Amino acid sequence: MEDIVLLNTIERYLSGDMLPEERAYFEQLRKNTPEIDQMVVEHKLFLHQIEEYAFHRDLKHALHESHTRLLERGDINEGEDVPTRGKVIQLFHRYKKVTAIAASIAGVTAVIISGLVTFLSPSVNHSQLQQLSGDIEQIKKVQRYQGNKINELGSTTIPENIKVLSSGTAFLIDGKGYLITNAHVLKGSGAIVVNNKGQEYIAKIIHIDQTKDLAILKINDKDFKPLGPLPYGIKKGSVDLGEELFTLGYPRDEAVYNMGYLSAASGFNGDTASYQLSLTVNPGNSGGPIFNKNGEVVGVISTRQTSAEGVVFAIKSQGIYSMVNELKKSDSSMSKIKVPVSSSLKGVDRVKQIKEVSDCVFLVKAYNQ
Figure: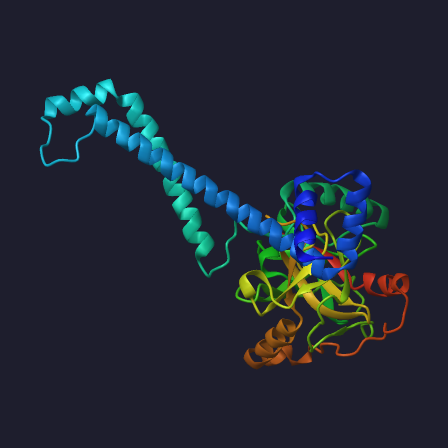
């Protein structure tokens, strides 16, 4: 397909001008062709930036015209002569409505300028990224669901009168109960983890690395039975562009499976510690593992881009090794953590892979008492 024809097709797709059958065909083409999907994402961002530029240009033009009219009417004076105090007061009462409007425009302009500075800053722009920890309403729903599960299963060791502040996903990196999640998921002083059977366990926050946005938890609960060797390994190498990937996470009250692919080897603003994925995720997926077809963990879901549908960022699995090694150097008691390097799921069909890893993926609820 010629580039000009493809760009025209993408514009028709983004503007909603396609017929339902044509749109369905193009969406399937986008799903099967990473290069076209990437072009759609980039073109959508380009159009968004053009719209912002046009808005800023029109606002500047309107401000200039208002300024010129006020000068022509004598309402403002750019010369050296300064009006008397009485004249200033008289003008204020006469044009206080105009003053209020001008102040509002100035405020809007200040907000826009601030937004542009943030947008152009090399630091992460949180207005363009959404962290994928669970919101309050979602947490309440999960709590009600888990409460019902606890009643079915019997007693619980969870402390009473706790206040859950955030939720997300975690997964085991050692069968003895060591888990990885995102640092931004752990907004409280303690954590509860819940397996796919609804069983809740107390977990201790072992280490938080805000720079990497990763954290380690340890299940400290008498009811938890350590697992044997984990079915998956943590990949040390890189992932190929277009490689098929899948994830399990807790955006709702049970584990949810999603499939996608690697769309860029770097993350937001070229962050080399992250991947860009084409994947559907929701709040609650933060901290969830990203698996390749061999059942190896290649990343940890962290954020998604707000201005482009299906653009998700995951911290590379090498960050897990880096954090664990740093922790072992600073705390000798952590030397017992054994990160799995090999996967027993290579060549296994996807349904069986999901069944094997689901016991190792947990819902996380961070709380304060």
